[in-house]
Image (cartoon, rainbow, N blue to C red; front, side):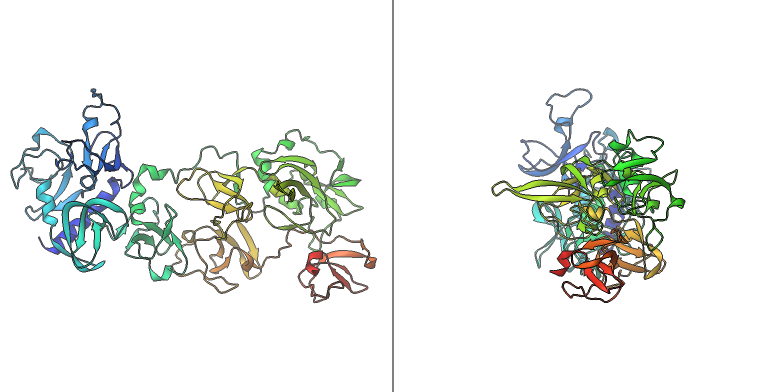
Length: 625
C-alpha cells in the first residue's frame, strides 16, 4: 500500500472515530451493551482475552471493561459482563478503512455473530472486531489481523522530519502529540526518539465540535507564534498550553484546546463542565443590566429579608439611623430642589442616582436642611445586619467629606458603611476593621454570573490564585467568588471584577463599551485587540471592554481612565475645619491648585475649597503624607 493511500484512509476514518470513541475515562462506542470504564494498569488473570483481537491480555494492560464487573454472579441481564475486556488500542481502532485488497471502503463491525463467517483474505473464522463492506453482496470481510499489519509501512508526515514506522507491539511510550504516557500501538521514528499514537497520527486537520460550534477547529502541531505573547490555556480543562503541545484552535475566536480535550468534547462526562445549574432562578445575576442597581436586583429576586415587612404605602415622615439629627420627608422627584452639578439626585446611603432604583411611585426621602437624600428602599436599610462572611455588621454614616475604601470591592465611597472587626492574630490581639459599602453588604453568598455556568460562592481566600477576570493574583484574606463544583480547575474572581458593569460609556467613544469575557464574542476579529489608552496588546484571556462599531478596546482596569471617585457624592457645603474660618465646599478639583496643607497639586483629587479665599485642601489626609 502506498503512503498516500494510508494517509487518506486514516484521515477518512478519524472524523467518525472522534464522534463515537471516548478517550478518557469512559468508552461509549457500541462494543458492549453497557458502559465501559478504562483501567490503565489492569493486572489480568491468566487466560483473559481481548474481545477485539482475541489475544491473551498481558499481566499489565490498558483495557476497557464493563462497568458492571464488580459482581461475580452471571445472570441473564449481565451475562458475560464480568468476562468482557478489550484493549484500549482495539477500542480506538478507526471506524472506516480503505484496504488495497478491496475496491470499497470498509466499516468496522463490533458485534460477534455466528453469521460473520471467515475472513475473506486469510480464511480464519472471525470472532471479535472485523471490517465489513456493506456495498458488496458477498459480504467482503477482513479480520483484525489482516487490517493492522497493512499499516506497517514507513510514512512521511508534515509534523516530523523523518519517516515513521508503525509498531504493532504494545509498548509503553509518551506520545509526542498528546503528551500522554500510554501502552498502545504507536508510530515511531528510528532516527530520533519520536513516538505518536496511531489515533493521534490520524487526527483530522479540521474538527467540528459542539464545544465550539461557531467555526471548525484547526489542528496545529505547536502553539502559533502570534499567540505566544501571553500564556494560553485550554478552554476545556483550563490548564496551561505549552508551546510544543499539539492543539486544536480557532484563530478568529482565540479558542484553544488540547487535542484530547477537543476530541473528548462529545463525552458525556465533559457535559458536566457546561451544564447550567437548575436552582439559580432566585439568585442575583451579574453583570447587572443597564441602569439597574444591585439593590434593585435583590428586590426583584426577593432575597432581602428586611423588605419582607416593608409597608406598601411608604410613610410620609421617617427617622433614619444614617441621619438622626432631623426627620426626613417623603418627596416626589419633580418636587425636589436638591441636585448635584449635573442635575442628579444622589442617595447619601448608597451614593447612586435616585433614578437607578425603579421606584414605581417615583419617590424618595430628603432632609432639605442638610441636602441629605435616601432612596425609598435605602431608607429601609437596617442599622444592623448579618453578613455571610463578616458576621454582624453595624452601620455608621461618616462625615460627608470623609472618603473611605470598601474592604470588598476596594472602591472609594463617602456614603454609609457597614462595619465590623475580627481578630487577625490571636497571639498579639491584632484586629482588622472591615468596612463595606451598601452594595457589598447586600452581595449574597451565592450569585450567578454570565461568564460561568455554575453558581459562584463568596468565600475568603487562604491561598494565592489568579483572578479569571483580570489575571492579577489574589491575596490571603481577600474576599472572592469561586466555583465549588468545578474540580478540574480553580475558577476564582475578585469581588470588584464580579461587579464590573455589563456596559459603560467612555469619553473617547460615542458608543457604549461592552464587557467582553471572551474574544469569541466579537464577530470577525482575527487580528489582535489593542488598548486605545496604553497602546499595548490586550491579553484576551482576561476580560476587557470593547466597542464593535469603532473597534476600540480598553483594558479592564486603569486604562479606562474612569475616576476612582465616581461613587463619591460631592457638593456638600458649609463644612467647618480648624484651618479655615469660612464654610468649605466638598468638590472634585478640576483646576491646578496646590493644597494649603502639603502644597502638592490637587488636580483630579477630592478637596475642600473656599472660592472667595482661594483656599484648597485635600479632603483625604493620606494624600498629604
